[in-house]
Length: 479
Image (cartoon, rainbow, N blue to C red; front, side, top):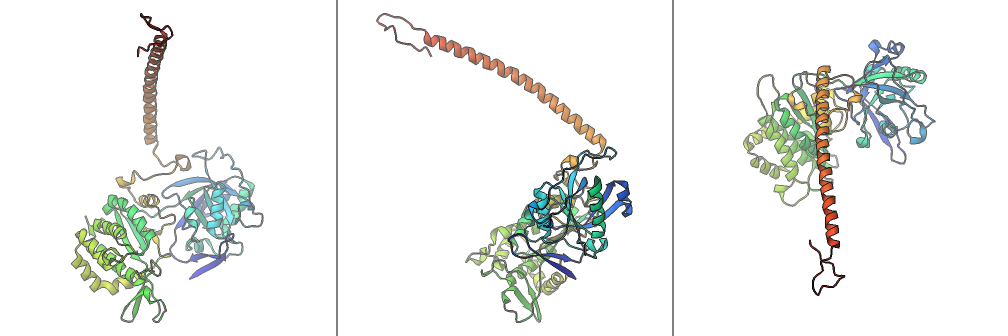
């Protein structure tokens, strides 16, 4: 089932907020203060669904203050519709950091989620909670099965946003009107010794290709700690459909893929065939290092990068154009067993295509970690941080993953480690100070010597040597 809400965004054309009923990326919000509000919810927890745009604080627990601003009638869809309230000082009784992220409450309606969140971001919000419409009957359980979709303009959104039910949201709004409400935000990925990473894509998608090329270094580093599983966007169309370039036929069945270049020479059928080849490359080259480890194929990752760099949509030479000839050339250069891949494509072609047709995601470009829908930008560093948040015990490769500014995050670093780091920092600063002091003294002495030499030069230049036949006003330079 799905529900579509027609919305508009300024002078742009109509867009759609698509709410898909399937496994979603759940977020949780715990009310910390006041206690009376926390008691309104079971264990003080409010559950919602995370937007597919923006960057959630994966693996972190973040303290925030709820802020509600009254709309002037434009339903948070225009910059001038509301004024961002000033954040209050945190209660002295609240444990943890004394600075908090600003979490803005807005109501759903009139424009897309992206428009509301972008305006809130521009006004200084660090996170947004969208409260479902007053007329909505969706419960918290229903909301958690909902995808808060991107309208196609969400790439500039850097903050996370959550959709909550009106039943929970109205309580938060009413309390925020009267007092300071503090919450803790969390995006907890199910954890395991190995993280499973299911990625839906199309071999003709340049966006997917760019992500895979940049994420390759992380995949190679994690190796058997990461169970990567490629999936491809295959759909079907009825026979006799006008655009036959999208499909390939296997008996009575039609398997179709997006056309990557419009009226160009590469067709959706070419993409579907390449999808099968890539699946076969993975299936014939992926190996486990031990029974409990993940399957890994360095050849698959290198093939993806090389194919997308060397096999272009445009060009008259088939060996350099997207398609089988260029694929064969890349496989040969990488010493991939082409005979094994060809046998796989011939034997398992229909089976693989049927699997892709059946195993669909909420989007043609989608990512799932440990069975949990990833929400946020398809950025290698952000995805890597989410992956590392899915380990029971993080491998050493996760240590270099970028983190949040420390003032945003509730205590997640052991005190002894923090004290040791502080001592080290102080030692470095003291050493730097003494080094700078010595350097400064040396510099002053050098400058003084240079000043004295310049003065001597000036005096010598003014000295006139008088010799026989020498004119009195002639200056003789000694150096």
